[in-house]
Length: 140
Image (cartoon, rainbow, N blue to C red):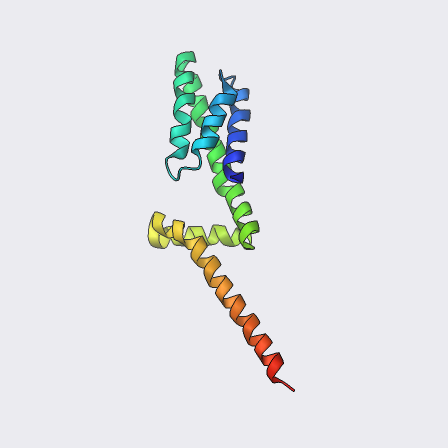
């Protein structure tokens, strides 16, 4: 939800900068549809592109530029920070995992990499805590 809200706010600010009519409504469309994986941004951008098309062809390019910038900021800055805080993983680690998984297994690897890492990390840390606790209780 935080990521979708951040993308919606960035889209709203960008729409205001380029003076797009109905900027708030168009940004709300981006925010609501951003929850849909892979195609959400395209669905949310469609109304803004149509409104911009009635204004001028250059405004369509500006709308696309606003959405491209907001999506890049989300993918490269916000998502690693938010995922890192919620999973207690450093953002640089997430970026490295995504790059490696993308090279090794493509899009599917990128989708599964961070959850797999988080589960593996949890298992290892829990096992270490268990072994340390067990060692303390068996020592006189």
